[in-house]
Image (cartoon, rainbow, N blue to C red; front, side, top):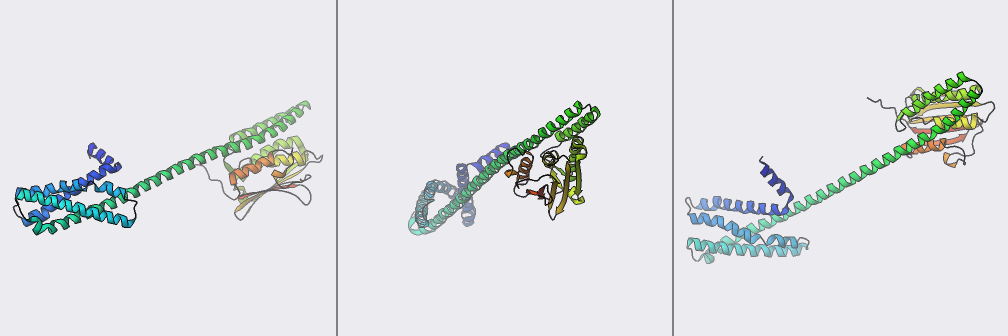
Amino acid sequence: MPMSLKNFIKQLSKSRHLQYWFLQFVGWTGLAIYTLLSLTLYYQANPEWKHIAHTFLQSPLGLIISLPLRPLYLRIWHWSLMARLLVVSLAVLVCAFIWTVTRMLLFMWMADAEGLFQSDFGGWFFPGMFVYLSWTLLFYCIHYYQLQQEEHLIAVDLAAQRQEEYLKRLKAETIAKEAQLKMLRYQINPHFLFNTLNAIKGLVYLKENDVAADMILRLSTFLRYSLESNPLLNISLEKEVESLKVYLDIEVVRFAERLKVEYKITDKAKKASVPSMILQPIVENAIKYAIAPSENGGTIEIKGWVDDTFLCIAVCDDGPGIGFTTPADKPEGCGVGLQNTQERLVTLYEDDYQFTLSNKAGGGLRVYIRVPYQTVVASS
């Protein structure tokens, strides 16, 4: 397709004004050709040139007479139905009458005919009325279609704008959520690092250099895992427990025989997806408030099981327990670990989770987490 034709079609699709004139030209030219083939040539095998000329001249006359119709119809578009019908009927009759008179006068002048008004006015007028009635119907149909298309384009544009705004808002929320998760995750490490470095310092003062060196090695292993793991990604509970064991290896050096850890995790629960390092602050809280203050130390029990469509995790200790049941109710100075854990769960699961604290019957604290059970999708 030539480029000029492509440009014309492109402009035609965008401009109502151009569409109007294009359809006017096509319509009236088509009427002239139809009249020539169906009437002039049908009734006269060898028509005179003046009859053919008259056939093609009446179309420009009809086009000129139709020009006031468009602004008139646009002006009355929002009028009541009865008012529009009245105006349209009158406009069709007036245009048909003017076109009939001009065509007949032109024909009488070109063909030297006389008495045509008295003998054949109706035969010329009624086809003219049909032409302008058809013109009117086509105009209303085309204009209504154009309005529908414009409304559709506006709706599409609005939908696209809403989608773009939604994506921008979603991106902003995602960035904010990522920043919040990273902040909560990185807020944990300084507590642990401070305690561990103090323990290493104590070992150095006691001249237990081998133990201190081993503790530094364990600390570097844990920190490497902590820095390499993505707080925005989930891992299997099995891997989470493995990383927790690296952390507890360091704490075992600090507390020696005073710290005991028990694991009771089902095979199905091991495959469950959990936020990375979600257990570390809970266990750290148990060590700080249950193990460290006790001369005899204590036991931390980590359980994991699947209940219907939910993963359940419980971290229990045999310390003094607590006087509150949710992290939000914790008294000032109880640390940020439990509060951060709950905020991470809110960010990741919204309302579809449970996080409760309760005192055990025999003494101690039970931290319970319940989240939807999902398995980790293997990365390609």
